[in-house]
Length: 144
Figure 1 (cartoon, rainbow, N blue to C red):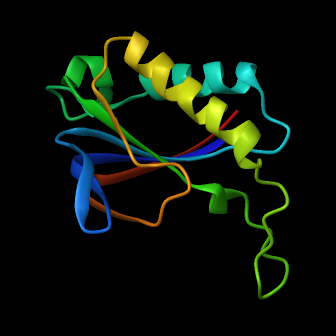
Figure 2: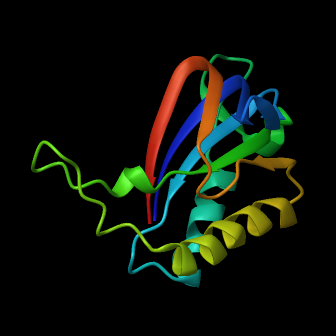
């Protein structure tokens, strides 16, 4: 499982011009599921997302967690994170098929919510427009 996590001041996702998910301060997480991933990877990814300390403390150091900052999470499925770019036309054979990816994507969402965070989402497989105001910018690649 792979994620690109951005610390944001705000982020939103629209489908067909309609906003389906929006947050203020927090994390925008673009989440890709590998064909070999299972529940263990989903649980570890949720732990990594919730435990990252990338908000600044009173001394300007990245030392505060999402909980410390009172942040929310916008999670958007992103199968293209597993693109094979060895040729000019990317291949996506390493990305999990929907039958595998959807339950694992939903498991990550449920696990982050279970820790008490506000979680908004896109819609798996939809053509989405994602907007964000990067804070920092701080962007982290997570892989479990």
